Image (tube, rainbow, N blue to C red; front, side, top):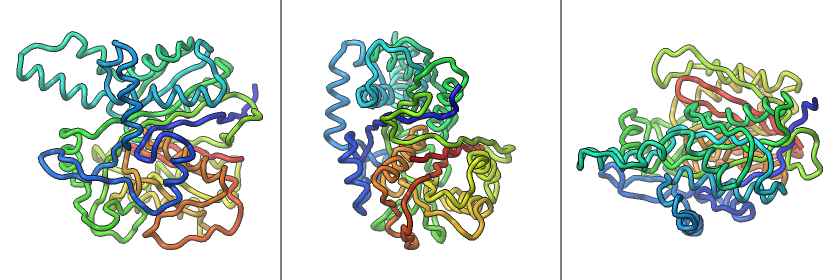
Length: 384
């Protein structure tokens, strides 16, 4: 069985837009996507979908009477998945696996149903089936009329890259030839924002760039939440229409010392990156798309892990969370999308307020990192 995995399509819906051209155009400018919404009884920076993308979601919701009961996290995934299989040349009814995860799942819908229960003392008939994590992949499969395995899971903020790992494993095991993988998150709700504030990691900044991901000298946490979904079409073998190839995968976890802990030198990232690079010389990596959520410890510990693995010759470092915020379970796949865009266009997208880094050679290999609460790290090495 071939060990080569081709990524034959990507699609996403996020604050950057929903078409590859507009997404890339937005990456080429130095503007962030944050606006203020009244959440958790306070004006709060978030990265929400743009008007065009919201219109797509509303249209999708109205296209089927059953869809009006679904959470945004499910609708985001459906919209991205429709576009991805069209790009890859897959057809409705084809046999392919689906693994689209989420850190929190039907966040808004669950909160609304619970509030209704508190007020009326009775749960809505569809409260349970529409708020399960399995909801995402099962509805995507229904919408695409696919026949194949359907998997949904939550491994907190590394969920989407764990979906990639699962897809690779199924393909290399010969259990299917094609797999749709990704993540979706719709966390812009009062209670979710309140939880992040309770952890003291949400941004209170009023600076030009309120999320300071990759600023290793910041004195306060600056994480901001964003919403969106992204998916990739994976196929076994070297395909002519491949956007990129998965050259290496790595994963690791840490022993928990605290519910959201990660070690001072991010041992989990050290292990996951080394595993992803076991067949590749570290000097061949041109760019690392870091997880870097904009927190003091999160950014710095990952950077220390990179220094340990790569030594003095560090690749170019970047992240997209200064621009679109942290999309929890979808963040890894949106980072993967950025990596593929840099590979395709041979242009490094840096962080405007970070120390200047100059691209001096073609971008041929990009490493993508993600980690969740408790040190569930994943690293995926892409090449062209």
